[in-house]
Image (tube, rainbow over all chains, first blue to last red; front, top):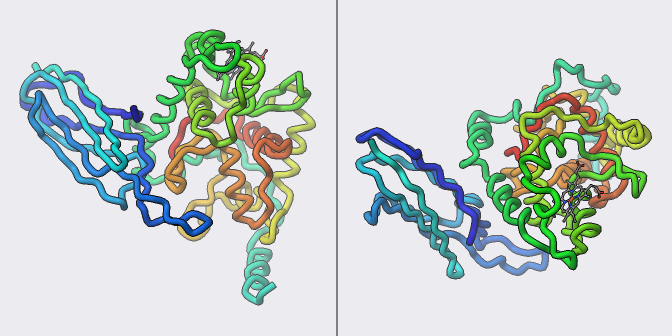
Length: 106
Length: 258
């Protein structure tokens, strides 16, 4: 499994706006580069990222070749109830990685 | 030589004063201080710093058994945050067996060979960068102490000699930029003082991790010199001089650099 770093506050007040940060290790090879021998280095990128909270999708992003290696994505949501965030990265060559984080809302 | 190259060399020769000497202790600044607020923020947040992915990798390797001895680093050294605290701050260090300094990567590979009975990791391999990033992180916030061992004296002198020696088609010494012109820019980039406080680093230009050796080779290529081989004695001497030049400065590894 590829390494991921996710940063979700462990606790939040109900209704508070919270920031979620994710960092996924990936080469993000754009598919436009050539080797010294002139061969194209095949594209190998993450194509989609999804975040679900207690099963419901709350954020999604499509990724493209111009995005840097090890994509860092940050976004905001409202803390409505305690539960679990689930993150999923999908990409070329069957790449799938997941991570999760729990939050307590008081 | 083309007329344009001649002109460039002539201009450089005119613009650069004679060696002005070492930077005063109070004026020393880490590469961090030259970075944009955005890049600083990336380094400061462990969940945004891509070098932390390499540290995660290193944590797995630290506890993975390897080699004919079937031992992990952890089997001998125990918890990395205890056993490796402050270690990176004093490397390169004198290695009695070879009667020469070894840098942190070489020290890891000595353990690979002698203690794990496994094959050495290649320079700049994912594994070697991960383990050195993990070990360097245990010195974060601590002052650099490298170079204090009196047995290192001749190697330090050699490193200093290499630092001030002009080299390559551009005929520039490290000192011409990093002692004499660190407060200026080269095209859009800060020249910086070349203080090795954060290695191994995640370099945005590389889109990946790299060692101090890789960084130095980049500069040598930049002045159009033949870069030293990885782990060459002169490479280690230069690393040693740079670390001792930064003695007392704070380790911020694994750092992000542009």
